[in-house]
Length: 123
Image 1 (cartoon, rainbow, N blue to C red):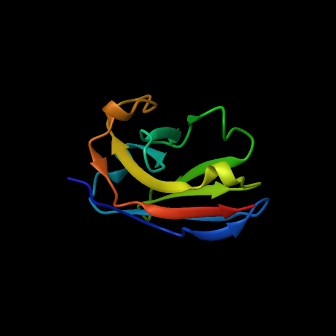
Image 2: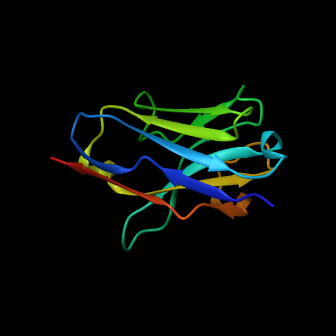
């Protein structure tokens, strides 16, 4: 079992940056592909980015490529999402998730979720 807790959300102006963190419990953290998803009211939760267990492979939604960077620290059971050049359309609740799937780009592959952290980008 893996428990996930996100932090780092907040209010930022357009063009600014935020770094989200996801702290995971469990001794097998390094076995999991980790992902970030986001959701706005009335919309489905959408894939943002994922990172393989080793950190060697990363995947990004087209909407965040070149602006967001995912990374992980397996020694400390942490996953990060560095968000730069933020836009108002990035406003959402951001969720950290874990899966044993090797790709991790599909929401249905994930079975451990955090409670989410709100990111609000003002124009």
